[in-house]
Every structure is written in structure tokens, then in C-alpha cells.
Image (cartoon, rainbow, N blue to C red; front, side, top):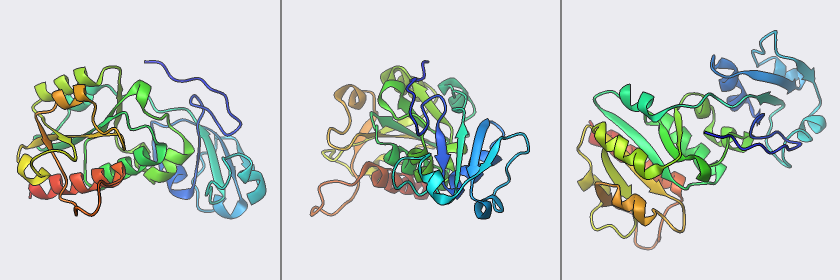
Length: 248
């Protein structure tokens, strides 16, 4: 699996920069995350547990602002890290408990949406998310900020072929529910299996036809007809809540 290699003054896919107290604290607490450099105001440094072996530079707010994209809410702390090690789908499926919820994203590319979905996945106890490597964002500060620490705790599987991954998910005993606004039944009717994979498409195009064909059922969210659709991260949160409460 290849990583995109693009140098950038604000970090790169190979050396992303994370910012914000929640994202940075979660990265520092993650034993699987290698932190390469750190920059911090003296005030923010009093709240962070920087390892002694991490090169750290004290900087003022204006200097930190030049290390990140414009207007990024760095909250006085920035770190440069190595991307997390790849997570393989066989590992996550093999370790899945008897009752489990998994999220599958079909070409959701916006880092803010993926970050927010990771946060919801953590909140509702999903065992991980699965994306297609070529059509998903790399780790980045914006994504980590939106995830509010969940990037470090929720397994993220990147696959080459999403349809093949959905076959593997089915073989592991997951009932695959594709979220589609044109579906006949609401999600409540599709839930009930102990292992559920919620499959969501990008905003606008939604699920691709091949992805639909690799779902066991299509379902829609019970939203008011005055609204055509929800943002994909909001839809994921609602679907995760429905799956969590259906298991009660």
C-alpha cells in the first residue's frame, strides 16, 4: 500500500503536522504514534506531556500560525509525526466481538468529514472504519482536529478494492447496510444482526453502483422530507446511534 509523498510547508502525507490540544494530547498518549518534533507556547506546554526525547521548540502564537494552514486553530501546540502503521482488514475482522459495528466509506474524501466520522465511531463504540486508499484523505492536522483524538484510537483500514473488502466483511458475519436516500426502507428495519457494517457514500454522488451491489440491503435515515439529505458525517452519527440503540 503506497503513501502519497507530497512535500508541503505545513507538513506532508509522510510527515503530517497535528495541532490543537485534544489531537496532540491523544497522539502523545498513543504508544503506536511516533512524534518527530513539537512546537508549543510556554502556556500550552504546561498542559502537554511531551516526551523528553522529542525535540521541542518554544514559539509564540504568530510563529505557530506559520507552521499550519491559515486560520488553523492550533491552540498553542503543533507536532510533526509519522503516519500510523497500516491496519489490515483481516486483523480487525478477526478481532471483532460477537456484537460489532463497522463503518465503510465509499470515496468520502473530505478530511473534516472523515475526522468527524472517526469521532462518532469512537463515541458509539464502532470497531473501526474502512476506506479505499486512493479515494480517502491522508492523515492531516485538519482531519485529526475534527476527530478530536479519535484518529489515535479508532482503527482505520485502507484497502485497494472496496468491493473485495465488502466481500471479506460479509464472510466475517457482518450484515452490510448501504445508506441511500432512495432506499425503500428506513434503517430501523434493516438493523437486527449482531454484526453490522454501515456503508456510506460521498456527498452528492452517494454510493457507487458496484458498492450498492455489495451491500445486503439499502436503507435510508428517517429525516424530514423538507431536507434532501444530511452531511455524510452527520448521517454516520445518526446511523451509528441507530445501530447502538438497536442492540439494547
